[in-house]
Image (spheres, rainbow over the protein chains, first blue to last red):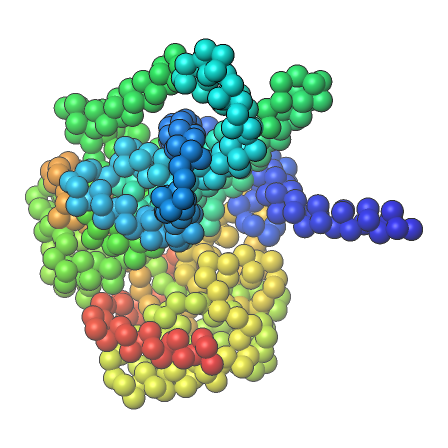
Length: 259
Length: 354
């Protein structure tokens, strides 16, 4: 009895979480452009997706920016986290709170502020400004993901390594980094998702040169979102699911843990 | 590890440099075109690039306000943008536009004479119409048995709980003003007060205030009728895969709003001649025909319309595509209200929060 209740409850929660995605996937095969009518099965939207120059261009920039922003913010964020970890007292608290500010700050404020900064610095809004903005809003999340791992780290390990003759750099690479790796990976994943998701900050910093998927989808409000976007979202969802399955498979086999 | 890190950083820097350089190193003219999302036959962009060798950087926006905000912020330049009527007059007032050189736009002669020199650009110095249409009442023929030819039907208690209103200050206030026999651009406090009273009265039988969902809600049978753009009806009409023959669109005989989306050249334009070439290209009868068919909205181009009339005479029976001349005469084009806009906003907000 208790088990059945638990199962039903779980089922309802999963339904609640996944119903929107299932609907979206179903409608990516809908012949009709309408969001409420079923016009028959079709794969046309998938074919059209790759012919559409605006969507392919936006997809390209979305992924390029996300990859670059993840790389840069993960490296900078990890180095900063290690630095912050070894700070003490008032200055540590100060830096930590400054780091939390952008996380709590509404996106729109960050976006407008960055735009104002870029324009007043005489920079042309475009790929570079958008990348800088993405790196900027990703770094605090990486720091927040890495810091707990550093706290768990036994601080004597690094000292022991150096006692045994390791240079500080060698100790960092061979001792500290492998220990905090799960934190770095989850920080990087967080940065990647945030970058792909972001609309507000991108909108203000992208200028006329580039646009990412969220800007493009948002601009379809007047005529209704094109079903090709459902097709694209389906493909992205399936890619993420496959990636997660591979990661889980690997960890089951006892191979190197990614997360 | 160090090597990997270093090479990743170098690669990232190189890639981003390549991008920033590609912007300035090129000699080829790049035209920055900024249009509404999903509002052009994209193959025409390729066609223009092929014909002229000019590259188009095409970006999209969702509302006039977003577009204006981006232009006013600066930081990037645009060569051709597509504001609606009232946004054109606002841009003229704010001195954001360059006058067009019609010598370079010979195809302007194909534009319907009735659609020239309208209130938003009285001497037609800055803008050329791109698409136009009306607002009216989208309805489900199975659920409405009265003729849909008057604004009063949106106030008819018989349809209580089945009426959707547009959540837009100008459209909602405009419909109410027109129903009372006033101009949609009224700046008379007394008239506006009456229009607001009528909307408050109507609120008792209205299901809700919505944006672009109205189209789908009516198509799904969630409501009997709603205030929308003619374009919303055309979107359903052209959808071949589902049957929307039970959906109709009526324009009230009291008159309605005529809307225009135009092509203009903002002051930040770097290639005015090429921008005018693009505008001229879009006004070409053949191109305009193709675009009108693809987007499904009414072209201002007489030649393009003639061709559509020959091939698809039935489309001209639809008031959403081709409103009666009498309706055109009674209708108003929105003008920029300037500071008076706040009066409208105030009254409308009171309706929404009531």
